[in-house]
Length: 197
Ligand SMILES: [Mg+2]
Image (tube, rainbow, N blue to C red; front, side, top):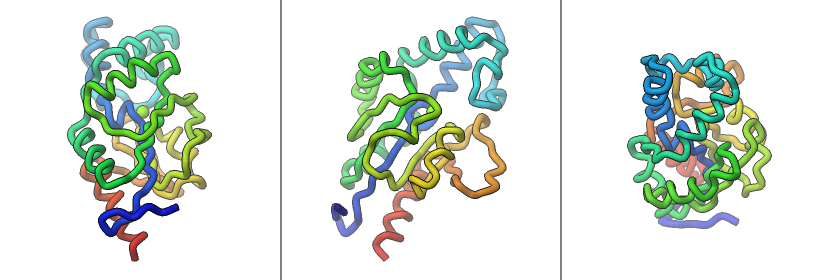
């Protein structure tokens, strides 16, 4: 059922957390400097597999990622305000993260402490987020190309939050690149405008 608000149509929006709402790379860079004594830039993180990027084992990568996730990750500029606005406009906000199930409580706490508005939080298997049991989504915002592309066929508007680790030749045009939260908001407004026509 379509829900109308302020003359617009409420839509179902899916957002990844890390790399979209939460800035994971900033604390990651800091930890690499502290733990391994190596100074890296965000542009050095050329792919999604951190074990490959840094030359560490999978076990080290898991420990590194978990340590960072239980820390208070900073938000990307405009994330909180945009989600608040989208929530106010009546849209449903589904947070679809590949964080491990045992991090649910820490994630909920982090969302609360940072005032992040959302409708539902789903902790999903990495690589299989597209199998999430959620309402049909109108938009997906992801930083993982691998996850994002699998949504094609199910979700029409797939937005990739631009980072060095998600470059693609995009030969099928399945995804659209966004660079900041005002881009995301703009895309959602465009979608609504096309629905209202
Ligand atoms: Mg992510």
